[in-house]
Length: 187
Ligand code: FES
Image 1 (cartoon, protein in one colour):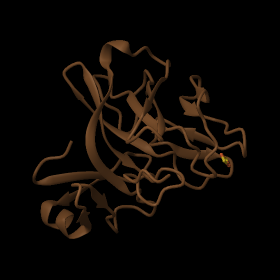
Image 2 (cartoon, protein in one colour):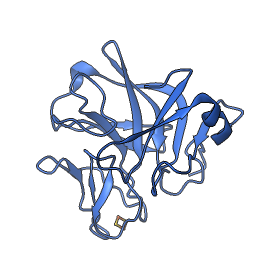
Image 3 (cartoon, rainbow, N blue to C red):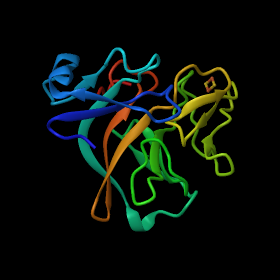
């Protein structure tokens, strides 16, 4: 959760879900605020594989009452060209929201070479993949980290928040495949 005074930023590489608490002053030093109100956060010293986090205008993507454990819901965020998957894992996950901290969402474009991963959810392992191109697999309980295959980047994770019975997307951790900017429509 983010307040005016504190920003919580987590590292892909930190399996213990250690959070780096950055003072507002340091946040302002590290953030570049774009004209659309987008913040690009890159904070050195908070882990060797710090993922870039892009804050975006929040969008309603699902409602709590439509979720069933291990049944993916296809969403698009931050625009129609970006296919993502929202899933209630049934177990707590890094970045998870909801009462069980088990609701997460990820891009379905493989971060290696962009192969679509739609339909690639593996309920047994709470993972995504294998990618049909080069067999990468991703752990959805741990911020989408790569567990095997050719990919070197985590699966970009959609930041979520629950407001009443609604689920909103508010940003992306990592970079969507093929984009230089998560907010760009040019991909
Ligand atoms: S495109 Fe998915 S592993 Fe290469």
